[in-house]
Image (cartoon, rainbow, N blue to C red; front, side, top):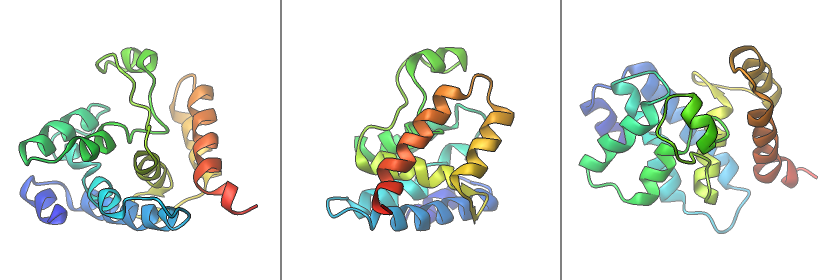
Length: 163
């Protein structure tokens, strides 16, 4: 159903393929946990970039929430869409980026899994955290706080299970 919705909203094919890859990665991460809502992860992962059917800017998360709301998606799905950007954006960072002042930091396990799966997929290819860090250092001004949140998320969701 979510793929059909992406298509109905004229989401570019490369974005749809990216969403599918993020879903696959999210399910791999979710396998580390017993108490995870896989259906919620599926919906959130497949719809996380639906806002890119209208814009490729930072506001795609906010636009995506508005689109998903029109289809009656519940708050838990909307929160995944809104909070998937990077390793989360604080209220202070949001203001600097021109977003409404609020926290976009993922809170629930499902939100964290989708956000981090999105970090670890470039296009449709799986990448490692070092790739993401290097990209952020090149492209994000004052990236230190974001990188620390990224490392913390990676540890919480992946590295802790490898020890």
